[in-house]
Length: 260
Image (cartoon, rainbow, N blue to C red; front, side):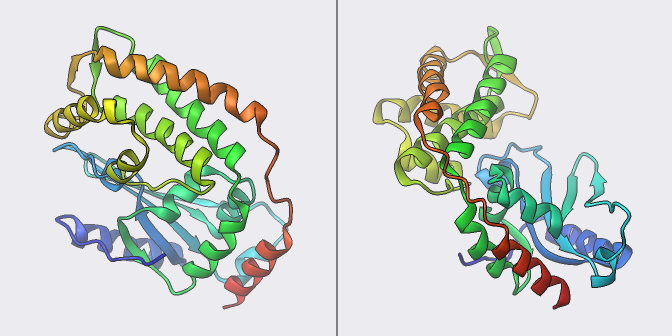
């Protein structure tokens, strides 16, 4: 995958914060990318920046026997939400085929990337589990649907927290690979023709509304969600376990990156 540097109104502030993290925590950032609605391409006027990063510490940090902190929470305010995971945590989650970390890796909005990140991405590609990912995306979709989209007035933002994971399920079912992060790309490939008009209408409304603003429930979209959710609830039960149990490539990669 080719990564392109982010260019936008918050670029200077985000780059400043990433430098603060590297200097203050004595870490090397391997990847920093957007993980929220800005990565999906559906940001509201007041959307914040959800910056997620992967970092590695000096070799000696990993040699002690005591348990080590494997995350950094750096900023959380109305503009920035910045936190990151240590390389150990990231590689362990790739081994589990954690869909969240694949989303970070595939984000189209990249704030910083090292030359070593491609090695991680290439190795991680062998650990993606279709069954695990569909379980994850179905669970995310149904939880958000029940919590936010069954009242008469609903936050339109949450439609995309349900539609996107359901479309991700279809992508995984058909293409056996991690789904794209950008909503328009995913919907263009996976959304049925009869749903494109109501979803396009929702998207236009959502991008003009503030984050917490609500509108009337859109019944055709709710019916579509309920139908697809029932299908993807059952599908994983029919799938074989496709997780990769082999730790060795990840162990070799970890040692190589820490020593490097």
